[in-house]
Image (cartoon, rainbow, N blue to C red; front, side, top):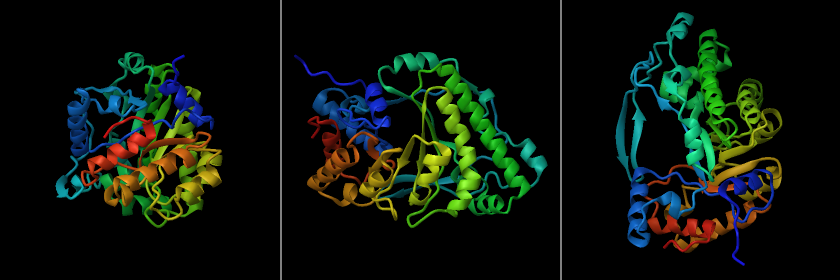
Length: 354
């Protein structure tokens, strides 16, 4: 009798229910350079350049189409491309929201995700076309106060200072930004009509050594605002996944107990307090972790065998009894050897990829 495996959707539902799937769900973040290398490898080896098919990626995005006529009232983002060993990256060299100084300026500001600027009518067909995969709506730029309004908007120092001092202009800007993001997510989930499994949002809360703000401030300021998005996802039968870089161990209990978050993504193993086995031991029965495949050490500098051992540890220890999605903590940069990428996905999928 042939062996039957769960569909990607079934695998994901077992995982977030903390039940053992056949293997952890698998995802990938390729930079353009790595995507091109993988496509060339699979075209030559399999006659098919689809990395999603070759790597058995369990997730597919379903998103609206921008309406070309919609124009946001913001200064253009002034950024320059810088080439490093890891690839080409964008450095922001201006503050496109620095003009917002008064409540009148906030009233003139048009957030990028005004739902009126998007056509959601194609989402039902996109959901049907993406079966049997896990349908994901949103991205890590939704919510995203620290990066979206801060680092890529008015400047992170001004934003954080305005938050902590309760500056009325900053608070009004934040609420307008979040209200538009919320209504954008609401429109997408309503269009999905119960066929979307994940609402993806993001908020970077940490750096390599700790949090960007005290845990009590996160609990009072961020948690109730994040909970609004989590509750929205749950009302539509979806799990909510939040991306956060950095050392965020100190707020994981808050994310579980006060926010109700289903999936925490990134979980950088190199950051302070983010050792995967410890996270699994202390929180793994109450939240699903996604990521943990670090990009600062083993994948870049390790041998193929080093990478295999790291992947096996994640699959067998962190993936035990569910609660784990296998993926890198961020985009795989071009300085990661192709054979290392293939090695970790061989372990995760059980396929011969090299």
